Amino acid sequence: MRSSPGLRGGGAVPFAARRRLRLAVPAIFAAVTVLGLAVACSPRGTATGGPEATVQGSAAPKPTTWPTGTVEASIALGGANGEFTKMTDDIAAAVDSQDPARIATAMNDTLTFLIGNEQNIGKLQDYPGTKDLGDRLAPVYARMIAGATQVRDALQSGDAAAVEAGFTTFFEGSTEYAGLSSDVAAAAEQALFMKRQLLN
Image (tube, rainbow, N blue to C red; front, side):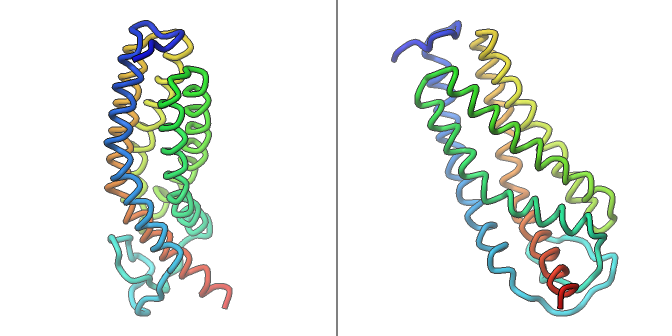
């Protein structure tokens, strides 16, 4: 395997990173496909429940009233689910290229995407009905952001071990996120339902 220019440790790091990436792609892809369909379909549920209803997996939407900021944040986070596939594909292509500059660009784009989404999590944490989901999402996003940041910074300093460690952290967060994706979709579905009710 060719050595990667600018990285101490040669080609082992791109190989390890690519292996981690390929193992993670199927689970992430499957998760975002399922939740993307769920958000797009947005089936109407039974009109039950009260203002303290919480997000529970794929529970039917309820005509409760969440704060506007919570509704918009839930919809935004649900919409971002569909972009995880592109994010992963971009990272995969960058790693396969074995070009540190291209990997750094992919991680910068990933950070822009994740940090933008992360700003919505606080609005979920501020409302009792979505606080639990927000509290579970916050450390997962923080882990992905920390890993992506470490990869980017390590590429600049030429630290191969830190690049691999950063990818490990990033994909640990990605795996955890895949486990929360159905709840993110459920929250977005419920928020879309409420928004339609307000507009009718």
